[in-house]
Structure formats: C-alpha cells, structure tokens
Image (cartoon, rainbow, N blue to C red; front, top):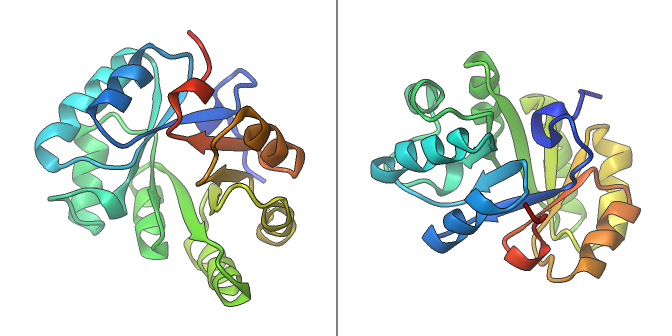
Length: 190
C-alpha cells in the first residue's frame, strides 16, 4: 500500500476540498484543506487556478474526465504535468492513470459502485491502471467502502453524497483513508 503523503500531506487531515466552480475555488484557497480536487474547468483557466492553489501550498488533483479542452491522452496529461503544478490526476480510465505515472504524477481511480458488475469493473481498472488511490462513489455506503478497502488493497477515498459531519465520520469509520466533499462547511478550517 503506498504512503498516503501525496494526498494527505504530513498531517492527519482527512477531508479533501472538492472544487466545482469559482466560488468553491475561492473557499478552498482560504480553508485548511491540504488537498484539493478540481472537478471542472477548462484549458483557459486551469493554469491560473492551479497556480493559485500551488501558491497556497495545496496538493492539487485534476479530474481529467471533467476538463474541457484537454484530452486524457499523452499530450494532454504531459501538458498538464508541465504547466499546472499538479500533484496528480483523477480519472475513471485506466490508461490515463498509466500516463499520469509516466509523467511523474500520482493517480486516483474514480469508481462509481452501482452494483456488483461496476465493482468488478473497478477492480479490473485497479489491476490494469495501478492507481495510488481509489475514490469510491457514493461515499455514504459503509458496505461499499469496506468491500473496496478489502478488494482494492489501496487507500480508499469516499466521495459523493457526503452531506454532513456524520457522513464523514461514518466513511472514515468504515475504513476510508479520506473523504472528498464539495460542502464548504465540512472542509477543515484554516
């Protein structure tokens, strides 16, 4: 199991700020979260957004499947690695994860566990993409988190539908190494 320092830093902070829009970015810049997931954006704005996060010492992971104007291929991921001060990428696609590693980035596989077939597909992507972490959605299912922890043999990040401090506590109690959420009130204070 890889060291969790890439996502979690030297501390024990376990809530990741998930950023979808400009207001989220502004809040993430001043909150205490050490790690930020960028879940939207486009080629025109990403360099400045990532530079601002980097200046604040945030570890930044870009969800490549959700970015406009940038493909999750060798050229796109190499460009992002060279220009965006990224710690890593997030993707549902195993080939993107391999390219990220080749570019010196960490890789998070995002898996939507809707049924046992989706779980098996996620396991296949873990085996072929060799991510550093797996983000499991929905993150409010303790059973899914426990299954993913046992089967994927990687640190699990619970994401999706995290609405309350109780949801965070439940996900961590089920074995998640961290929780990602776009709810500002759940982000660590500065």
